[in-house]
Length: 548
Image (cartoon, rainbow, N blue to C red; front, side):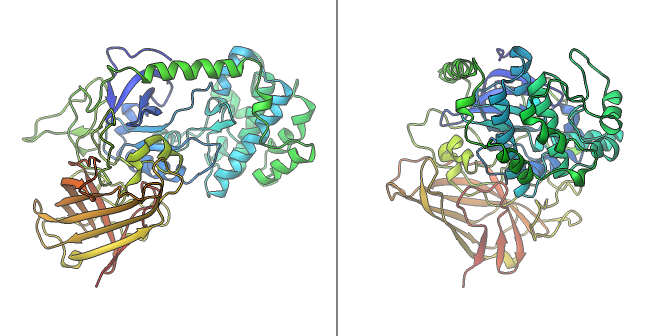
């Protein structure tokens, strides 16, 4: 962890930054903080990826997919940038723990008890990923955090979206050399069996200090590593016998011959190794390291001088073409050396904030309140529904104004539809939906109702209001907001509505509701509005139905 320097922004996406956590091929990672004071790892992506016109959509899609993995072995996605923001960024729950790569580099291979516990925990992590219908595709030592309760598997969508950009530009493969499966090295394709191959390579590293296709102290080139992965047997010298059967089964060249995550767990269970024993098996010194890291983070986040609100650096203009921006009047908008934010709407209504809250961050494009564990991180921010899906906020862009399908949306693409000035007649009326709320949130709720009332109007007019009713479980109090909505854009079956004023639904409530953001709603048929499940807050309704 390093101090910020003069080239670093002081906020990204409205989150104050406190320190550099590290940097890599993807970009810079910062320590940030939520309104409730919880720690975030905020990763900014190098500007070259933002210049790829397809990156933003892939970035949002992959992170929505990653957030489908709801397990104790993954960190929660709290927030991320929408397509068009330069540079793209991702905020996740921060775990003050070393990566497996850093720990082994500093302290050597894991003891056998810790190694076998690591194997069982990572198998459980992969089972959760695969059960969600996903493959991680970048399992490697630096993507494993040695947390206090269990190891955690990190970096789903951000790496994959950017690697897709590299693959598109260069014809290269997607993955990390030394930890990719043969089918990745040859065809660029990797599914669940590729994750099991990578898991075995990670376990070899944890047990010996080097990967299965390199030797101690050796730094082979990427082509050499890929050749060995495809054509040579793994070097398993020094591997403990206890983990040998699992590693050998997962390192076979043919993907169909590898075990599934369930099969890998069965191999471990046959010898009495199961998840749940990590705390008892921590490597010597790790507990003290974790305590020291946590204390340092608490001290940093308690800084009363931390910058809150918008970045002090000038924002960029909305993208008008791949990698270009313009200001009103056509003046070029050169990117600042620091990380910049694109002003504009967000895909969700404002969140109420208790009056005692120390900080009230502005909303940025495509910002999503957190889900499940992210709810605990983002506190009250995550209590309100995010209506709609992440779309490009660029007015009139045919390239990026389409409705991304996160894998199941029935919305129709509007990429070839010209914008309209008027709210279509089919939208006029009252729409409502009810969700179960979130009984496990930091502010528990047991009912989440959204009522959207719209009337005729044209762009720039106030065309209705959105009322959120969220019933607090503990107090029975009302936690929602009522917002006035201005028509910002109509694009095919998608409408962009901006919040011009907001108040607590319970006018006697001391909560504060934010304004200035916007959200997107898609019509799936004349009686139904679709709320995308990716960025939506926990417990919110998934659809709104026309009333009357």
